[in-house]
Amino acid sequence: MKIQLWSVGKPHDSHVKAGIDDFSKRLHNYFPAQWQIIPPPKQSASMSDQLLKKAESTAIMQLLDKDDFLILLDERGKQFSSPELADILQKRANESTKRLIFLIGGAYGVDESMIQRANLIWSLSKLVFPHMLVRLILVEQLYRACTILRNEKYHHV
Image 1 (tube, rainbow, N blue to C red):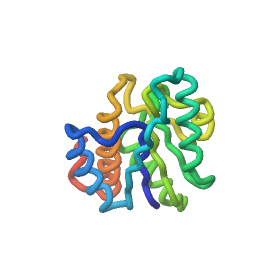
Image 2 (tube, rainbow, N blue to C red):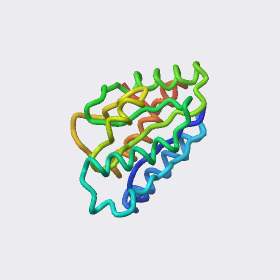
Image 3 (cartoon, one colour):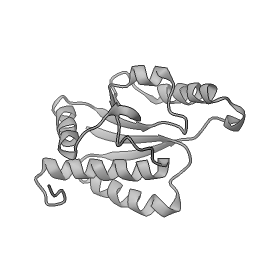
């Protein structure tokens, strides 16, 4: 199974890049993992929120394969404990998912079409975080889930 971490927006900010790179490298020891930063559409500053979400979602849909398992990060999604996230990873691996994609939408969220396409909607918290911190939290939690699956010492209960 390959893990893809997709995020709409700018490249990683320098203040979180080192952490993202570190946990991405650690995660890669368990599953091939790769970041894909999806740039906002041209002239996005002049678009309405709805039009921007639609344009971003259209770009994302073009990158998705029909067999991809898409987990959308959204504050209205279901919350999981770290062991529950580990179970999700294990289930996807057991079911021979080829590409497991975690998507962080744009600043205004995603269009309804992305919500409909998502196989699972996950909320990290009821709080709203800056996108750069969500990237770091996401990759750290995926790494943590992998260590749980292998009964390694990183996760403490």
